[in-house]
Amino acid sequence: MVAKETLEKARYHLRRIEETYDKPEMIYELNSFLSTVASVPEHLLEDYNIKYSLNISDDEKLTREFEDRANRGNNPQAIAFFQWWRNEYDRIKNEKLCSLVIGKRHISIHRRVARP
Image (cartoon, rainbow, N blue to C red; front, side, top):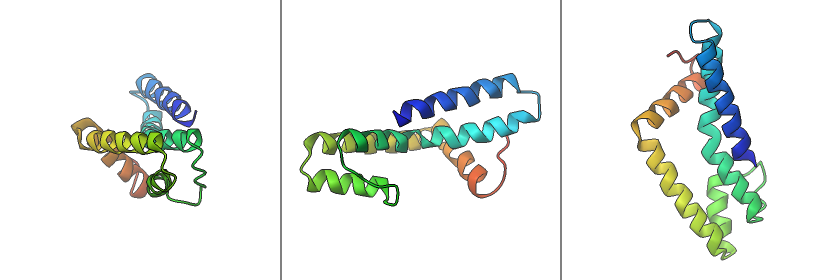
């Protein structure tokens, strides 16, 4: 499963942050952690794209297509999962710590190396 692998990768970078806390390499681990952990929700959605055989290709926008195909295919399990996923993702984005992580990830990816 994609999400499980992504969580393992995030745990790895978190351990490496702890191990390299007072070293210059910690910045690299921090930026890798931010990128990885922010990907978990969409990787979970990809897992369910596969589970429900929605066949959303890598060229398509996953969130939009997931909802559309679940509705068009009248797949109640996929519809219910997407509603749950959307509610949880919105809730997580509004939590203080998660909002900070998402903001730092945005800086790391689009602007400059994020610092603690």
